[in-house]
Image 1 (tube, rainbow, N blue to C red):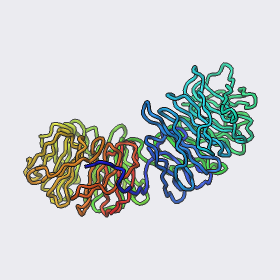
Image 2 (image 1 turned 90 degrees about the horizontal axis):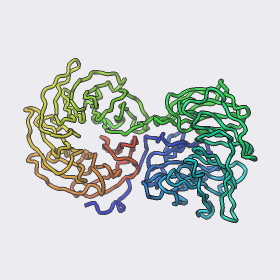
Image 3 (image 1 turned 60 degrees about the vertical axis):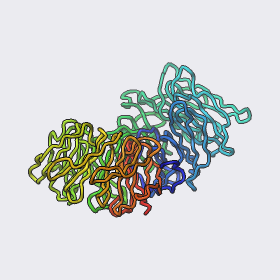
Length: 617
């Protein structure tokens, strides 16, 4: 029984593949110039730019929504979002120890942005649209110093905040129809705003930057122009460009030492402007065909790092101004993961529109196969490694060469309501597939011809998982109709059927193949006899949500489970006891596998994250 999940050992997280590119200004470069910091689900990742070694800041209970780094690099602050009616926390981390220093809890639902004062005296946090407050925190005591409504009632949400460079007592905020400069009155514990007067102009501000002498404030707007504000008088001074505004708004803004403004747009353009004249400098310009959400500068501006909504990270050397992709990952939920037969060096994942092959040790992508506007539900590798076989929602089975990703063949109309499960026999001559309509079909595969051997029609719901015995004589299919059926692959008939009051999501054979392990929507993990279908044991696999993935170690002594609870659990097979629990996913775990050499566990989730854990035994 699962009584408490706090008493077990933690799984060691080795590396992550993923980056939440939908968070505005989520990608940061540390002032030491050696590490980049970015959010992934509930976690803040600190990754070395040279060695790619990763450290993880874990403590949030929901998705990280914003990140800030202090000017001297001593602190990192991260805010989160949460459910309606709950408080969203801000955690301040000590960069050296990677441990949490303060946890601030005042905002409701979401923290929109955070910022540190230049000497780390204060930190300011902005609440989202359900909170609409600005709070000043004293970094010496870890207490709230003062707070105020972040904007007028007639204005919208405030999205961004930036401290002045020479004083700890002033900062600026911007958002929908609002732009304010604030002054902190420590003695009276007040923070007082001054509205910036823009005349007849109405702008939605998305990013702010202040020159090093605190003379001018530059704002990037959703309208696609840059506003220049005189800070001393809080008056509008200039705007640009006057013609050909930036399409889809200005999403990022950086001011270099030489007075050049580097900006990014929602359309994917990265360009430069003169901060004095606000005119474009066309000699430094490039385009990425994705929506840019983050723009960060390294050092004095010799390198720029760009995060996009498709969850890729690009690097630009300022002199060349050509983007190079340094990180790529899935931008939608990952639905399946698999290792080739007896090979732990690489693994394959699939999601919406693509299949990707990764090097296990380095977490680098070596192959990407794209099918636009389609979703790959399951992926398998032929035991001899000759092809990657995939199941798609358009009802087709597609096979590709693993070296080049070249299409080998397509089985059209394999299933009427999409292919939802797939497995390959050990002789490399057959594929067994399951569909949304409930049929299990067997396909004879040769290099030039693919024919259906039979269709077995007993399931009434979606077939979620298929596993084949080592000798290819039998396979088992798990379905949403509450049954698992063991099929004879020689006679194409049912050998055994298992009934349960659940939607079966996962099934696997014990290495000795005399027992089956199942998991489903009822949170139960069950052991079954293969011979007669009798239940041997049933236990609670989770305190919440469905069990979506199971895998058994090669020696049969341990198995792993994952599901809607977002936790990876390692169990003793015979005793049914949990030994280790791993927390790191922010979305539901969709699949997980133990690599063939029993060195790592790889788990994937519907937030697009791929996490590699050290196998504890």
